[in-house]
Amino acid sequence: MNRDPGFIPAGHGTMVSGGSAAVTGRFVALLEVSDLLEVMDRDDGPFIAYMTYPNVTMIAPAYDVMSGIVCEHGDAVSHVAIVAREIDVPCAVQTRLEIPLEQLRGREVRLSASGQLEVWDEGTP
Amino acid sequence: MTSGQPQTGRDAPAAFSRPTALDASSPDGRAAIDSLIERFGVAIDSFLVRAGKAQHVSDQFDLRRRALTGSYCYFEHLPATLRILQEVTTPEALGEHGRGICGSPIGPQIHCMIWSYLIARENEIGLGRSAGAPEDLALVLDWWSRMTTVYRADGFLLPHEAGQTLPSAPPELVTRTLAEHVLPSGARSAVSKLTAGLQLYQYVLRGEQRGTIFFHGPYPDGNGSAILVEEFTRMRFNELPWSPEAGTLPYDSVAAILRVPDVAFEFDIFAGMTADPVDYSSHVTEVALVTRDGGTTAPITEAEIPHAVAAMDAAKRIVFRETLQWTPDFRVAYGAYHYLDFLVPFLEETDTDPAAIVNLRRQFEETVARRLPEILAAERLPVWERLFERTHPLFSGVAA
Picture (cartoon, each protein chain N blue to C red):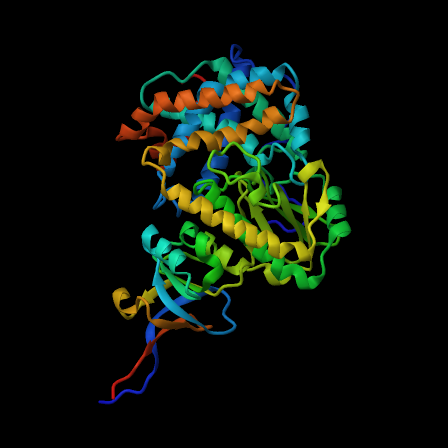
């Protein structure tokens, strides 16, 4: 069956910062310090950071180029959530991915105002 | 939650007033010591419950061993440092000196005295070793309680005893400073980005320690609004060997003063803050940004903020890359410098011989060199087991 290009659901979380408009960016999983170093070295534009835990050290050196934050754990008073609100970056916590993490790395994703995470799908001819 | 006017919890102990020094050799003195330890333990228990999710763990650092390293430095050298200070000042004078906007020492540094001393002491007790001299314990508690009494100036020692409030400055000073230096409303977003960036910078600089990120208040303004102060100090001049050169950052101290109606704030013992509603930014009606560099309060203008943000971002990346080069041992040993930086303000703000600071650094480094092998090799860290399992009392009394 043919599928048109477009965003498809990739997960859903609870918004604890932002939420007035959708943001887009490259999906970057910050699971280890090496992931963060790669982002700092590449310095190639806005990205949406995925983290397991709300650890601010993992966003601190690159927060200025993040367009959004998606966290598996955390809540509204997690340090990441507090910082995200202050820098006015949308942040979702308690996020459940519907597509395996490895299939999202490097792809264009969109975080909506409702906490819906979507990934760009090229479709099939 | 507390909004505007500080409130007192129904079960709060009576206001604190004890002008005389604690005496570990008398029954009354020992009872007073145990009472203070118990009260501090309740505050720590409250703090751990509120921050319990973190469990003091990190991907990059061994926070528990880091804290223990610094705590042993206090355990070994804090009493002697206080005896040096006794020659030139009083706890009350030092507590008064800390009050204000970007004062020194700040509340977390005052509380760190007893926190660090008791952490190491409890670990020693858990290992079946000496709890230290009772007169040293009495001296630490005496300085802490007398400094805190003057510093808070509300008759209480601890946030949980006073409705989770953390007053650290005269309310009229806070109100006046806000009025004198209030920024245009369009600057609020820029201020927010700067303070968030400074939080992250301090967090990186201090190896995942809040350090001198310091929320205090709320200060009533007489109109039902709360005024909140968020400050950052010792950013340029400190005892951290990996800190960027002073010229990298434009300010050593920054304070944001915010008028926030219809929001309730709570503060913990180490100056963390929670708000209800959580996202209080839309409630902010006025904000001022000041520095105390040079000893006087001066405004930071809206035009100066972008430069400060850029400088701080660059410094943050430099420090982060440097910390990645640390050896596994130094990822624990660095705690000595953090804790040194929390104690040095006590000496800096008095007429103490500057050589005392140099000597204190050497003593801290010697303690770490001697203690580190055991701390690194330890399978058990009894004090953390006790704290995170919430075994009460968290801290043993003087008779231990």
